[in-house]
Amino acid sequence: MSATMSTAMPADTVRRVRHTPRRMSESDRRSAAAALQRALDRRDNGGSAGR
Image (tube, rainbow, N blue to C red):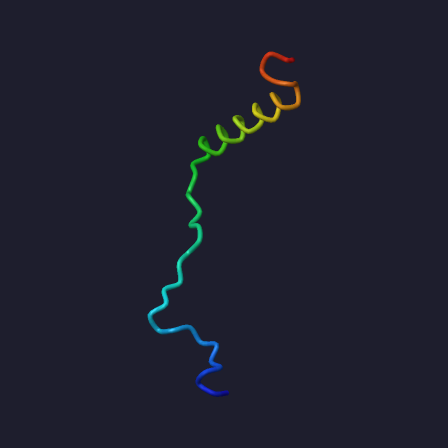
């Protein structure tokens, strides 16, 4: 393989992590799940007023 066809990354290239998972406590996870469920219920019921 010639030097112009090299697929290696340059030495100064830095790989970045796209997303590091956040550590959630159990209570945070439950409140997030409850908020999601309320939002889905509102959508299914036609809004908070039930229209």
